[in-house]
Image (cartoon, rainbow, N blue to C red):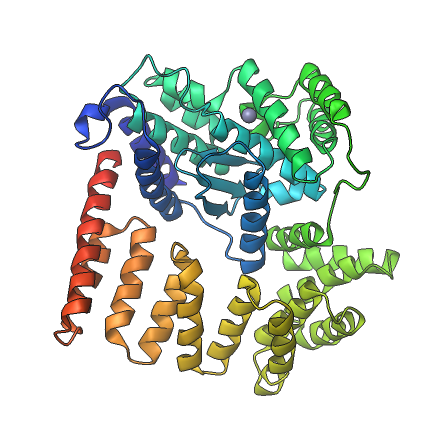
Length: 479
Ligand SMILES: [Zn+2]
């Protein structure tokens, strides 16, 4: 918590002290910010965020968030759809979309939003704030606010993520209150606009638009009597009129078909994974034992039961149950991946040998699925087949060059096969994504030692060094 608080005060300090003039090459003073500046700042700040906040490292959850938000973005009014994601390990309900295309989701969203449509309604609302540039509009009069504003947005995100909203607010109150307030509490008009645009987008994306008012309503009832409201609803207050307004909107949206999506197995699986993540192993085990006893035909609760068994290190029982589930649902990606997850965690040669045929059939059905590829990498590493793992990781990096977890695993594998040049380059990329620019530069210098005089490689590394120096310059303004 100490580091979080010091980070907050750093950002608040930046918000108080910095003016756009202090940053060479950023803004001409007449424009508040251009997409390119926002992009650069957004990436630099995302690195700092990654450094300060714990993240949930679950390829399934990551893939679900990315796929679902990109799908919503497609039908949104968002111009620049180059998004970067961070899944914050916090059980508070919160989400944000910040300039520069940063989308942050707390694990807590999955605990509170009961259906995929409810989850999507929060994300659609956030995307609407972003597409309408609510973070920026209204501040045009204060032309020197870009960096402080970005700092304030990120400070707000961190404060909300760690549930220290009040501390953040108190500290901010002494300084750049206007910028922070603008970020933290959108005006009622802007909330309404984000709801309206969000709900239209929700329907366009094929979701049931009634999910938005029903989520608001449930949350309002739940927190009416004194209980501390979740962070998201402090920054986006729910009122009866907001519920009425979104209800009216939902009714106006004439259903083209009556098959609008309310929920999915995929979303419920994400909920269960998050619940297990936040629960004590013994609690989770008891809960899902009860649920499977009461609902003997629910494959979903059985899925949770298997995960709970895994968390409790009961590998044999988990294996038996996951095999039954997979057999019952031979073409379902989630039950196949669950069985592979159990086999990987069991990590005996006998169990690992059972993975190959499962992967083979999944790869045939889902040749471009990131999660399947990621499980294949984990399998290859468990089998100590590092050359094949390296090859596959390089393929994954073509699509996920901004994913620090993939770079981290790449560095490990490249070390195992003794490719020191590529090991240091991978470590540099990982460090850049965590805003550790000095260490990244060291890694790039080390990489040069292993380039064997290859001029093309040296030029590439030098180019990366120049880019890293620029990023360090931007980050320096914030630290
Ligand atoms: Zn809002």
